[in-house]
Length: 415
Ligand SMILES: Nc1ncnc2c1ncn2[C@@H]1O[C@H](COP(=O)(O)OP(=O)(O)OP(=O)(O)O)[C@@H](O)[C@H]1O
Ligand SMILES: [Mg+2]
Image 1: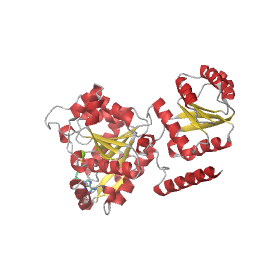
Image 2: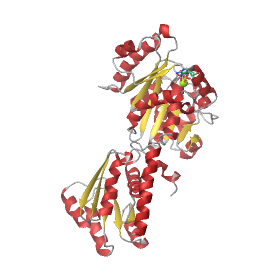
Image 3: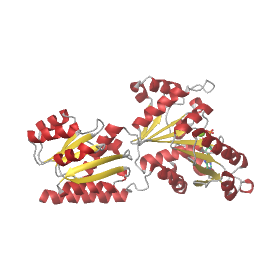
Image 4: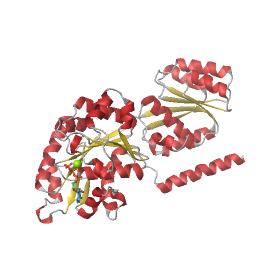
């Protein structure tokens, strides 16, 4: 497999339990090292000193986890018989991986025929084990760890599209998250300008293709802006046409969320029914506002309406205060904004027309512009919290992880 083929594995894995039955110290250590892999933050890793029979004895009386890994030294028919007995005690939804001593194609085929997800040969390097477990869990449970983050302006023109574009670039390039960006504005969309693509479709057509399950057409409507950044190539709608049907738009969101771990939806200039739909489905909303009185008032009203709509007891909204300094003498002070909204401001971005207007009109990436790093660091704070990626390995750390596993491989090849 190439690195690119594995990009779908670079997501926060769904909540699951993985149990290993092994007596091999090296396998146990490789398995335990996954605790420090950010993707496994929601995966419980259980180690049991034992084999296929120990597992059978345990699951005679208790529920099986999402994934069972059994190591064996013995790969004759005695083992497959025991594995079959274990299978009788497993829940339908449990997947299994077997680790054995030799590369044996016939055994591999037999195990796969029995419903085993994979057969691995010891010793297994931690990265390979991590990828194999991730692949199995994603296949079994779907990428239900997918996060939908909605960006909405408290009023028009407060910078919602500029900010969601900046987040999309940063998430997909710096943080290496497979990200999908779409909007709901139909012909009013400005995404194609900031993200530099020619709209090849309309929201109406894309939503129809999703609700008809027409994956071929949908795949042609997706613009790949970067190895990990995908954008719905819409915006060709007639501006004065009626908006898309909300059930169909929901089918589109569902389709995308099954495939992309992070979906960003820009709700600026979208009709109210699509805003309502996306706000209800989103894990979190970035509500963009400005320090001017009309925007602050609208923010207060919207916070209340979003809470009512979702039935939230706690806020599901981050307030992004954009364009601070646009008119210093006429702005509502930050302390008063906080008091009026009864919640903290998650990020504050200064008014900087030279930076923002050139970024937009020349389709640049905000985080690569002089002066853009400050804004992007501020903006990414709440996003990283939502996605739980604050522990994602930075480029340097990644290098050192590779270095260690490379060293382990070298050591192993000497032994
Ligand atoms: N912090 C900022 N400082 C200066 N200009 C900004 C800032 N943020 C955004 N802008 C500029 O403000 C204008 C409006 O931004 P943008 O189109 O992103 O807003 P919007 O809220 O999506 O608008 P709409 O409601 O029309 O969809 C753009 O020209 C953008 O470059
Ligand atoms: Mg916009």
